[in-house]
Image 1 (spheres, rainbow, N blue to C red):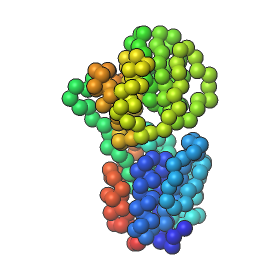
Image 2: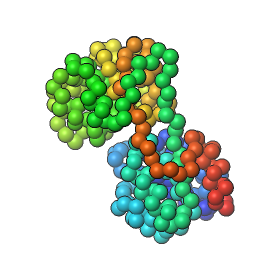
Image 3: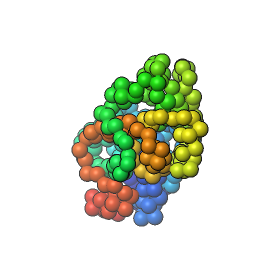
Image 4: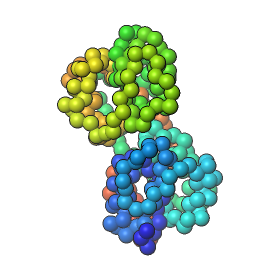
Length: 248
C-alpha cells in the first residue's frame, strides 16, 4: 500500500486494471473492489478487495471508514446495480465520483446488426432453427435454453451453475480472442446468428469482425442507461479528472 491519496476503484474490467497501474505510478494508493464472480481474476496493481458491500449504505460506510478521497466506477457497462450504489454512496458521503467506461461499439459498413433493448428482446429476436453463438455472460442464458427451436454455443469465463438443456454446448474461454479463432469457431459450429451485449472494448471485438466477414446477423443488446455522473473513456482522462478533485 502506498502512502498517497487512497482511491477506491470498482473494478472487474481491463480499464480498471489499467487505471490501478497508472494511479500507482502517479502517486496514488488504489484499492480495486471486485464482486468475486470470477474465480481467478487477472492480476492488478495495488490492493484488492473481493466481495459485495451490502448495498449503497454498506459502500458508503466502507469508503468513509477507509479514508478514501475518491471513488471510480470502472465496472462493466451492464453492471447497473453497483453503478447505482456508487452514485448513492457518493451522495451520502460527499465523495467525488467518476465513471471510467469504454466507448460502445458502433456498426461498421457491411455489419448486419439487429439492435434490441434488453435480453428478453434478444431472446425473442432469434429466429427459429438458428444456431447461435451466445456471448452475454452466464447470468441470463436460461431463456435461450428454454427455446427448443434454437441451439448453439454459449461462451463464458466461469462454468454455469445450472443444467445445460437442449443441444447447447458451453465453451469456457477467457478473452482476448483473435479474428482467426473467431472465424474458425463460427465455421466449425455452423453458427448463423451472434447474440452479444454492446460491451465495447478490444478484447472481444474480433467476434464482430468475424460475423461481418461471414455475413452473419448480430443481435446486439444495447447498454442500459446508468446514473449520470462525470464519465471518461480512458485511464489518462480518469487520472486528469482525479487530479482536479483530489490534492495528490
